[in-house]
Length: 259
Image (cartoon, rainbow, N blue to C red; front, side, top):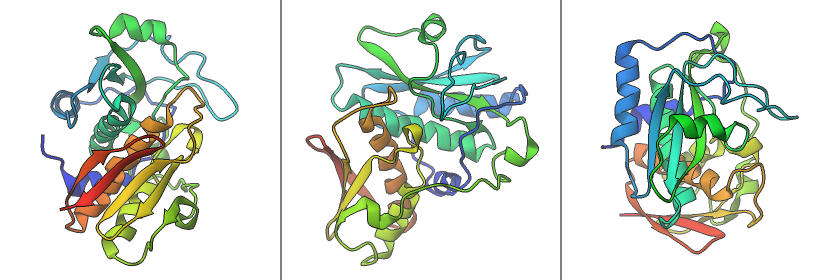
């Protein structure tokens, strides 16, 4: 499917993580549109998304910690699945999953990336996996329990690093598209808000790198960087700058080169 650049870019600034839901089921039209993007958005071979209706209440039990709260009363969730034999599987699954989440946001639905803090057994019972596949993340999907926390009306503030902490080399302000792209990345979601992405700016390209090879929170930094890649691409494209991705050797993840 063709990426709806404007609506997904706008959704970047509306999206916020939500863990408490009203239990309200989206209407048939909204549900059909979410299922369609799950089926049709396959930007890279080796990753896919599956909408799970009427989820087991056990899926989110135990998702509690100092930085986490139980997800409650979600009518649906979406599983993000990677073929573990595919090159760059974590990265491409993050990119794909964030596309689905931005589409949900554009439709007025709340979401929350969940990596390691859910129960895998009931997910395995509800999602049919092919040989070599693994669920790398999920998101609840529905409407916030509080009207003030629904998409488009939340007053929540993003806690994000300044760009000078994220850019390893190059001038952020040299070109407008670069600033727009990196501001879009700056508020991207990541495991425990660790923001592991770093950037090197060249004349017509931006390289996305991870800040460490160490993992944590049961979520790969590569998956977080895949999320960042989509935000960066949307920021560039909304300024009229289209490009291509080339995957690199980790901890460099990928380079986005403008055509």
